[in-house]
Image 1 (cartoon, protein in one colour):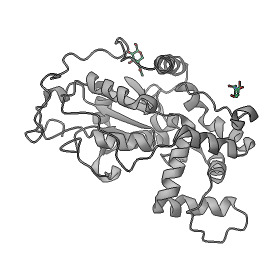
Image 2: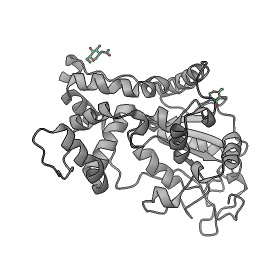
Image 3: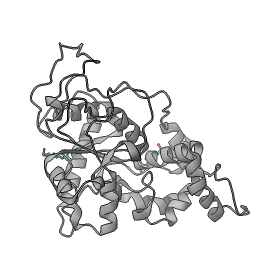
Image 4: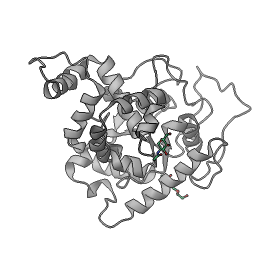
Length: 319
Ligand SMILES: *[C@@H]1O[C@H](CO)[C@@H](O)[C@H](O)[C@H]1NC(C)=O
Ligand SMILES: *[C@@H]1O[C@H](CO)[C@@H](O)[C@H](O)[C@H]1NC(C)=O
């Protein structure tokens, strides 16, 4: 329960892990963090910065210095979301959604209720068993949280996200190779045997698979963020981005008045992000027609979250 002792500490590590792997959404009870005292094991140690005081309102604050382009993009994102979601016929809350979409959404909204003793703990978490999702709660509890909690979502360049999912899931995770990789090879590789290992899926094969899949039933790591997070049905207080992960995460911590010992953690050693060069290489190597078929599936992610479509002209790819 959220009313428990101050042992409850939001797991910012888990936050980072999930940001790294997919679109995500999290909720924090406004103010709950401010009531927590630092744990005895982790004395404040930074009295100078102390408590961050009154939380400024989202939107009305001056963002930290930094990339003006990214700030413009955040503003565009905010306005686009409001314009699109204000159209007639758009869902206004999760109960406007078809039951399958609602189930997907609620299974992915994470309730930050404190899981780790410290943000410095080094471990990989089991998303399923260690964390509380909205779907674990009763309908009235869900409604209460959607209404009163601080809700935020982090987005990432859609293609970078796909490449990252491809590299991580098919390059490193046996379960994904068996569950999805083998199926992809069977379907799209001429001359594949009846039981391929699925550990050598190519990026174009992965793209072909995405073209044929129903976006609403995809695995969460490549399901369009629009379907995963339903930004019209849930009124997010803040949409952060992977491109300014640290600054945006700190912003969230400020808004929820996190005490100083709750920090956004350093990147874990095992995490190797997909570089822009690697994305450029993969996109330019993929058949153009394939990209043209894949992009429409993610068009809402590009447009709502203000990401440009990739430039895969001959000139751009020769560079
Ligand atoms: C968008 O801006 C409005 C007004 O400044 C603010 O209330 C709202 O929380 C913002 N929404 C997002 C998702 O950033
Ligand atoms: C794509 O990149 C090339 C080479 O950098 C550039 O000349 C062209 O204007 C770009 N196209 C678009 C639509 O951005």
